[in-house]
Length: 168
Image 1 (cartoon, rainbow, N blue to C red):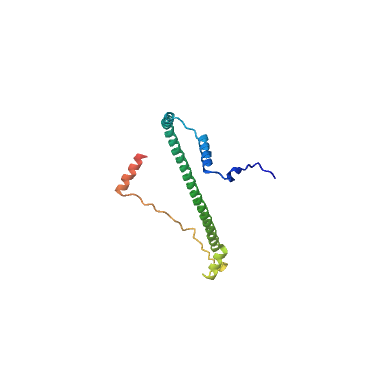
Image 2 (cartoon, helix red, strand yellow):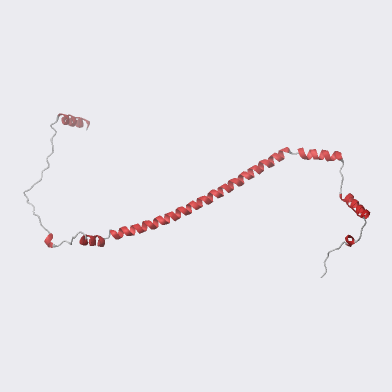
């Protein structure tokens, strides 16, 4: 199995201090670029003060985005709380409907005709009607009922009747 790795065997060789300093100096000089001082200062000033409105706009955008995210999170929290309340209300409704059904069945059982008949015969000593318990009553055809209407001989009643007659 071959690999494409390369080894630097110079690291294992014995070097003197002078050789190491020379190698470091050449490496440092080759990788560092120096810019003139005048252009560096000018470039730094331009960069710092080039677009102050851009930084303000970025800050405003960040604040708006943070507000939108906070509103979204708050809405999700409220939504989950309402979902919990709805589920609790549904559970409570189911329990109340079950209790209503039980009470309705008990009420129907207490008020059924067979229960009422049993209670009447056993507790109250009642029995079903038979012919010996019936009495017939005859009425005279000569009897008559008459409703007597009170006549208004009173002074105020007469005035009231006249006012009603005028208005009609």
